[in-house]
Image (cartoon, rainbow, N blue to C red; front, side):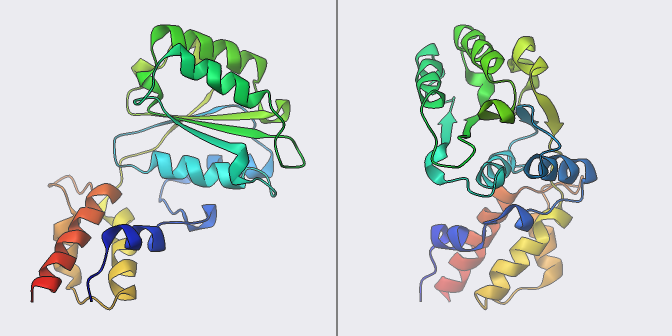
Length: 221
């Protein structure tokens, strides 16, 4: 039977914040501080590509309050539309009623460094109106390039460095996927395949590429 990679990703990627694992204590402290209500400022996730920032943003958005609904979360890819028109559209979103008891909207701004200068200035104004969760809007920004985020926007956020992932971060999920699908592998060979170079770094994005290669070889037998 042919195994589809996209279906595997949907099946095995973390569905809850509790499923998100990292060896970085600060990251865990911050992301769990928001659902507890101890942290309320907009969150800016900074880290290299493939470190799981977008996935973390989506998981946190879904659990920021107990009755958060998908209808109350808006995901924006700034790389697709970096214009000020997008910020104006977001402004319309945050001024509508949410479907949860706290009337809270979550806005995820992925690749936020791609916003134009005008859009960034407009975003700063919007964040000034809604500076914290208790004001009805929770902004989560992600970026690979902190320098691309204007200083006024950075100043309104809690900035969290999401460190580059290592092979020890991604190996458990790779094993879980292969074990779950009864695909044989040698742990030492898998570790080598997941490791990008002598630094020991690895990414979840590359992990799925490795799994796809393993599946392809299995299907060719």
